[in-house]
Image (cartoon, rainbow, N blue to C red; front, side, top):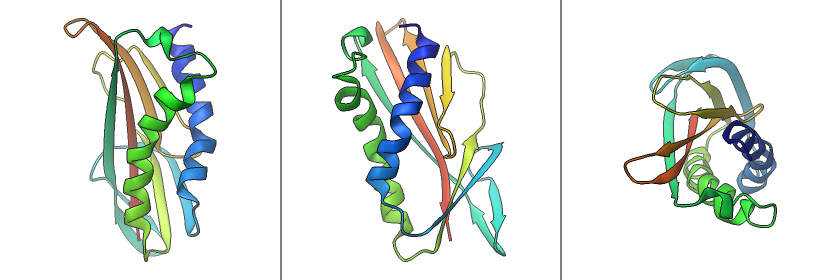
Length: 144
């Protein structure tokens, strides 16, 4: 599977899984304008400073893991669990979660996809030095 098609497929699979992991009981607002770490958003008279959370996974032979029966267990879950855990801890006692589309920047990532309606970006590139494929998950969020 081509890299761009792979990350787009991961983004589609990841959204329902993330929602299942989070089990949000507070309001969620998604801002589709691109932003970066430490940017601010004002929602309901509350100024929220956004945090960028980043996780990366290396794979020697990515093609072994993109099969339908393996992609959730080997790629999606390991990428989403740190994000879901961080957000779950931060939303305790809060009333609103805000996510924002993560700004794209130059950096050699050959394939990039954004999760629809949630501030998560998935990037995939081949690291020639380490001879492995890197999948990087970024989430831009804040709470109030």
